[in-house]
Image 1 (cartoon, rainbow, N blue to C red):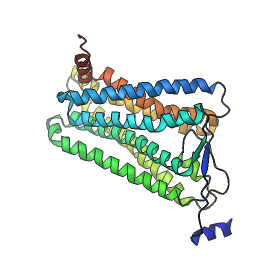
Image 2: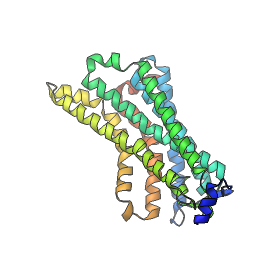
Image 3: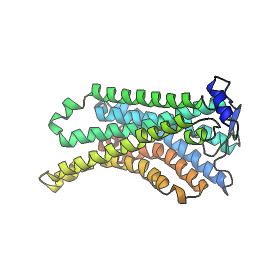
Image 4: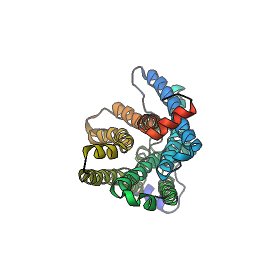
Length: 315
């Protein structure tokens, strides 16, 4: 193995397989019923996010910095579902478990980029609520259209660059042993662990990506709500506190459905069966894009009013 690694260091051709095999969900009884469920989830995700985007686009009153972030979240959820779900269903429902090397890296790039942007959108919405409640008189000055667009554009750039670096490091790996990916898609961690040369750079980057796309955003959101809670405790009446907190309920619901399943899975990973872990992670990937538009339609008064107008339903 040392000779093999030293040879790779001397620009010898990397061992790149023609294809990988996605093995996730294998051996799970009655799994085809789960695929039918995923089809339903995908359809609801596409319809729901399309409705939210259309509502925000058609109603000029919703073209505020907050709803720029909500629109981008719906856009990312739509793209993320379309990048992940059709391929996932093709792999497992039609038993097309073989995926070419280049297609796998492409699948990985788009899936991770959109998943990371889902988290960054929650950060943007968290900042919006933080300023709206802690500095209401300065909200329109601090959170402008230009600021929100710049923030979202920066998040897009950061996500794309980080995932491109991950893809670049994966192309430096040789796969001379197994080509079976024990996941439901081209998972970064599962890919670099298959390498038979030094995968230390990919391992270090994986830890960095976990911090960048999971730990830091979650920490920022938690601290922002600590500050919001402190600010609300200074509000004079309970009615005013309730009214201010109600503006955060949709965002808090999104944060809960996105982070809680991942925290539970990662915390209990050593005691969870591999198949259970794969199903939990797949649900954590496909559920938020379906539930996000439902939550915003049901819990956000402005969107509810606009939806009623569009569908001509009397309130």
